[in-house]
Structure formats: C-alpha cells, structure tokens
Length: 92
Image (cartoon, rainbow, N blue to C red; front, top):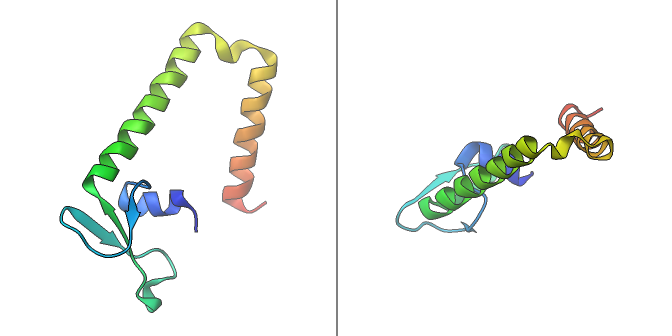
C-alpha cells in the first residue's frame, strides 16, 4: 500500500499514528479490514499535507509562467515521470 492510497482515504500522509487521539479520524486501508488494522490521521496532519500540496502546485505554476518547462530536456524528464506514473497506475 502506498501513501497515496492512504491519502485518498484520509486526506493526509503526515503524522500517521496508531491509536486514537482527539481530532483524528480513522479509516481502514483496502484489504486490511479483516485484520482490524487502521490508520489515524490528525486534522493538523491533514492541513499540513494540503498546505504542502498547494505550495507545490504554486511552485509548478510559477515555473510554467517562467517558461521552465519549455526547455527540451525538462520536457523530456516530465514526460518520463508521467509515463512511469501511468505505467505504475495501470500495471503495464
């Protein structure tokens, strides 16, 4: 299981803890329900994760505005990364 699969269920990857604390929500990861395993993610962790994603998105937007991705070697690297992500997601 990847952090992204946990994130799609809980909204945060940081500060993952076992146990239950105030302000946390619990979710069972795919395939773990029969064992009773769970992941608890605090609201603070969810907020930090969301803020980090927004920061990264803004950084990408700024690079687009500056023309960073117009360089052939950068475009090639981006395409290779996207292709790997697609292959991993589809299992091909």
